[in-house]
Amino acid sequence: MANLVPVILSGGAGSRLWPVSREGHPKPFMKLADGQTLIQKTYQRVVALAQLDPQLKIKTMLTVTNRDYYFMSRDELAKTSAHSHFLLEPFGRNTAAAIALAAYQIAATQPDAIMLVLPADHLILDEAAFSSALGRAINLAQQGFLVTFGIVPTTPDTGFGYIECGAALKEGFAVARFVEKPNADTAQSYVDSGKYLWNSGMFCFKATDFLEQLSLCAPDIAQSAKHCWETMTAAATSPTAIDALEIPAESFEQIPSLSIDYAVMEKSKKVAVVPADMGWSDIGSWTAIAQLVESDENNNRAIGDAIFVDTRNTFVQSEDRLVAAVGVENLVIIETTDALLVVHADKAQEVKTVVTKLQLRGHDAAKVHRTVFRPWGSYAVLEEGPGFKVKRIEVKPGASLSLQMHHHRSEHWIVVTGKAEVVNGEQSLTIHANESTYIPAGHRHRLTNPTSELLVMIEVQSGHYLGEDDIVRFDDHYGRT
Image: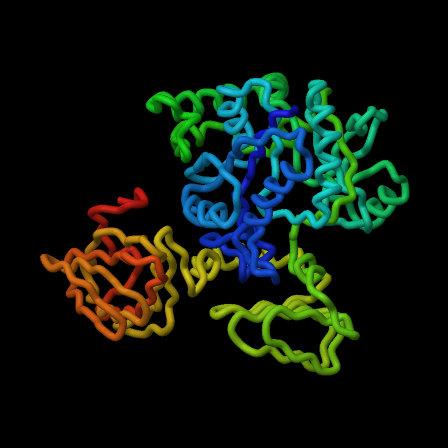
């Protein structure tokens, strides 16, 4: 029986899927047409693996993600029957650092465990085929190989890296080399040869074998990651039993920022690849999202409210408004409450350039939506102007905002549905639907939802400065003081 520890990597911003994927609410938390997020599907995939193969022993999994995404990840995990520990990064440091720290944690208590490294933002439609490929990968991993999954190419795609298959092994192939994203002609020659596979970015190996190869191929990463792990766990009496460990920023920053491919897989002599045809997609662009939606007779596809007139090969995703496409073709149109993207389907990979330009301008649309998610729930800006801002606030059952104060703004809170417990200065009061309270600037205040139902409120802010940084936290259940 194989002892398997799935490691979920959830760190990418998914800038090619702007304006839905943004820094504050990135790609793994995007909902697909079926209402599920990519990270939820990843957690469910792990549960399915144990059901498909009774020889697998999966006690728990490990999610490596940014601290800012911890509570969103935990909420998505709660929608499944899976259990996960968390390693919380203070900032991104690429996949070699993330996987190394995960390997140190697993090796600390389960030295013979096999790691299955899965990005949180990929899609696999054929779980039975994935389970079969994993069985082959585990057999190779038990022989000491570092195994990657290669996807049998269906097109000469220039958006993927490729793996050249070398000598045949019983369960797969030795890896001859990894190849960067090729041009169209080179990609076609790779597909025609039958010797190349798409690089999926999924891996399977023993934690101890990976750390051994990391020490050989990238000793600077191995040493600095080990120091970071020791620093992180020094104060914890039983670090592997803690649900969430925060990675210290100072020592984490000392780990060189490299991908696992550059650091280890391209250098090690112990790398194998398992070919797989399992309905895999990295959901790397809006055209990939479009392929998940049924088309009409003119190959138009839509999520949300859309009308097509004399239009072909066009995809529309609309969150808020009706979108009408007339007399166009080969377009991708993405509408959100605060942004509109129109891109030729052939240029879908270049959407990330928009994000780069927004970042250079310091534009909020690169980071956050009108709806901003917080550990306690979310808020959406409905209207704003000089001296005022109107928000819709949703507080999850049992959740509580921080005890806080604002220097420059006062707030009116009106309960729409549910019941709110409010601290307002020296007062503690309960507010029901259609009731309100006024919080002057300078008053300490806190909002709590004491019920098992969602609390919905309208907040009206007034003042000469309404920035989100005008907040002083005195106490917070989520460690943000």
